[in-house]
Length: 132
Image (cartoon, rainbow, N blue to C red):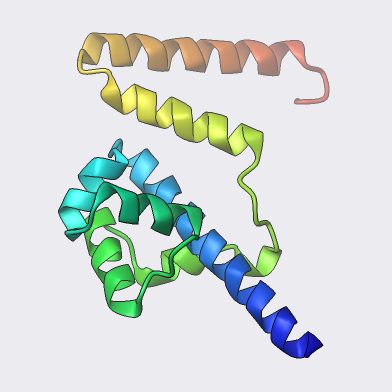
């Protein structure tokens, strides 16, 4: 009985991981859940359930999602062996930053923001003796 429970738990962990990777890639491309849903021919609710690991993603659907998101199917399993289930708060912030950056339509604003990040990064490196 315990091995069945462990397998079920492991399966759920994998489904969550795959869903997180779908959300991560979608966000990096600046797509909404609705846009992803439209591209793969499902409802918004279904796309949401895939990302949350509530509904399993079939092999065929995962292949379709990989095509739409421009990655290999193996991308969704990367990092699975590391047992890092949850996206850290820092990773979530970086994904949010990338998504918001892609929503900026003015290239001059994008360039200015990129320059600001570069300057702040260089300033942090020069003021931190341990970073050198």
